[in-house]
Image (cartoon, rainbow, N blue to C red; front, side, top):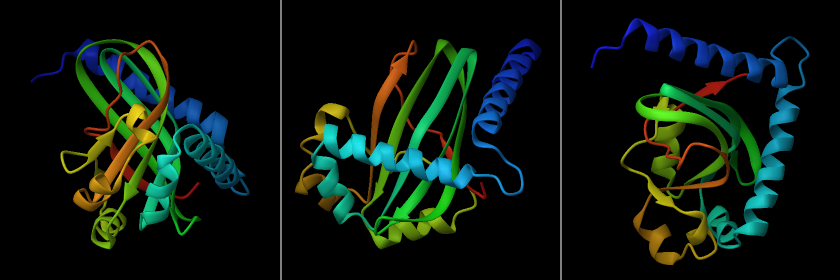
Amino acid sequence: MAISRRNFVVLGASALGLAACDSALMGNGVNSDAAQKIDARVEATKNYLVTRYPGAQTLAQNAKGVLYMPLVTEVGFGVGAAYGRGALQINGMTVDYYSATSASFGFQIGAQQYAHAIFFLTEDALQKFRSSNGWAAGAGIEYATPAQGASIGKDTTELDPVVALIFGQQGLIAGATLQGVKYSRIIP
């Protein structure tokens, strides 16, 4: 599919706008407190997640690692872009920071924000994520809806090496998916 010049400019402007917002909010200079801001957002997200969806606590305890993305902003007008920052935790401790980016084409208009957590339930799945040069979420993920978040059970955790829970959606785009989202390690 060829992209028109107009759509390319809109997509580029959307991506730059998201990056500028993130830089302004998170900082990116020497002696920046961006890591502390990400950590604080991750802790707030974890607390919200286990309070609102108690089944997520058991899932996190059984996971080899959890990637928390406290705030992903998505905008679209024919073409869309999304961006967010978060942290990978192993045994409740942050070990790496990641950004999530995506671009999309098709019928879409609006903006939304959401949070998500990706639970790596096997050591192999966690190592593949950590050793990749930009891991892309795809078909190998089991998605849990917020309604399932309270009742994610043993059958899910035994069958699926990676489980993603999208929650806290606000905005005017219907639905959210992690298909095609690329995660890259960052130094905040």
